[in-house]
Length: 285
Ligand code: NDP
Image 1 (tube, rainbow, N blue to C red):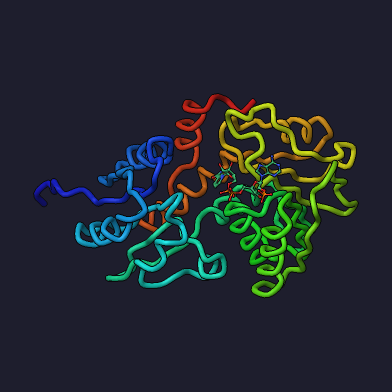
Image 2 (spheres, rainbow, N blue to C red):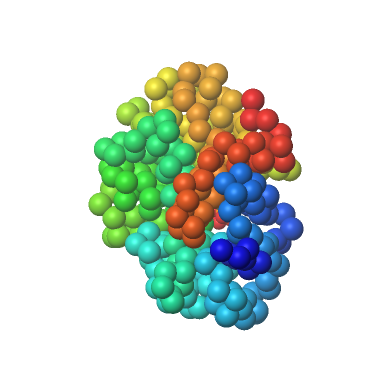
């Protein structure tokens, strides 16, 4: 068989693309598995997103990630949505299936895969801080995975209540809103605590969730979405109190694993991706 000089194409469309490390992580996995596939990180302004998607179709891309600010607006340029992306109303990964581009959301799925290494959320009680895009994705996936109770703790009441309403109407989980106005006491019986806010994200590295630390109990699993730095104050505080912790790198890495599986069918080795991110962001210990 003659050598092919035509690589398979994947990539990402976002504004602020220069700050997105996914390309380094995904290309490290492609190289590791000897795949002749490229991942092209593209700076795409909001008014040209439709052109970018049409370009990807014309060039036969097998799929692409899309990050801020395109996660909602990309939907009008796609042919259909996966189950959780439809509930969330947000897409961060498009996948070519036949001649269609289908929108999936790997944010929450990446989080769930990372969490499952420590605990299965089925039948569990969750406290989740935050009600933005990451929280919405995580809340929906936790609910679809069988979490029975999800308390959404958020500073802004309207955003928190909107997420609670979505979970109660579109999933089997029972969700409730807790206003965040002073140190929050994590209720007894909580199994999983999630920081889905941006507190702790560089340069806010000294940021700390306003919680009553004595209510973090051994046996709880405490997970963070923050990638940079991977070891946040909440994870340090939780570890010091005997909780099991899950960092935000796992969520990002598993988004890569899931995206590569969608696009290529290959089960990518997460180790090579973690090594690449650890090199970029520093060790998590
Ligand atoms: P949004 O802007 O949509 O939401 C931010 C959330 O954080 C809101 O609930 C907001 O509350 C809350 N928040 C921010 N600052 C504070 C504060 N000082 N005190 C209390 N609450 C605060 O962001 P996203 O949901 O898109 O992203 C959240 C984080 O998740 C980011 O740091 C992002 O980097 C990370 N992320 C990580 C991923 C990964 O793969 N590891 C993937 C996606 C996101 P309010 O509504 O009151 O403003």
